[in-house]
Length: 314
Image (cartoon, rainbow, N blue to C red; front, side, top):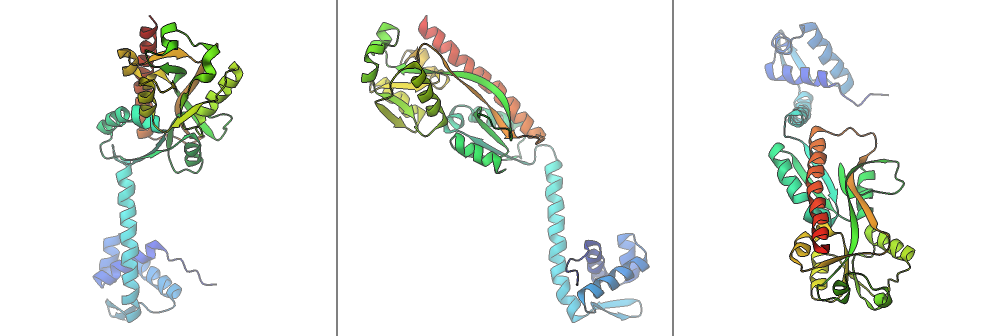
């Protein structure tokens, strides 16, 4: 059975000999012996099943088959050079790619600052951002379609490594004129009458909230679902319901008094944010830098959220 795969060294010898027309000159350019060039061409012709050169003394010329073959070989060698240049580019400082997945909340409140800092260190790195919910980030990671995911800590996932960044607490946000704000606490006797404004009932966070309320014995009867944190805050401000949010997404509103933060119930609902990647995968310098920047930015952001809640409560 004939082997249909050509040896790249033989292809290089063929292309060089076709260009120079001399075994001697081809051997000199490739730092080989004339015998090595001759053996490479003979093996290539045997594999191709036809003569590629006509010999005329020390000079050689392509046959018709050789001319047709050369067009393909030139393309192959050009692609190989292009592949080598691409690999060389990746090895240079600041080059490469970074594929990041993140929730829409993280895209809005965390990534802009992180990416601005990252671009200063890696100006030529090609960055792609894939926004989506928790389930999508898990799917993208497990199918190697993103390198890193800025996400909530997954449960029981042994195929991923999770690098913790910061923890937050889900709380109830109400307008200053809301009865709960005036009372300084959640009044359980009229809880069922409240419209709870939540983010996407199919999200991982909503599942956590639902489980928490069930454990607290609080009903989730009247729910208004939105796909934007900003939209939730605006509706809460005008008194259309009670929002369920983490304080770090409403730092400005809490600091100004436009919103008031209250605990969800007797027990706190805490979440852990971090960076997920495939277990056993060695992170590049760029990826390690990205993780470090996320730690710095989110530590400051989470701290402002805690400060805003403490200031509002005092």
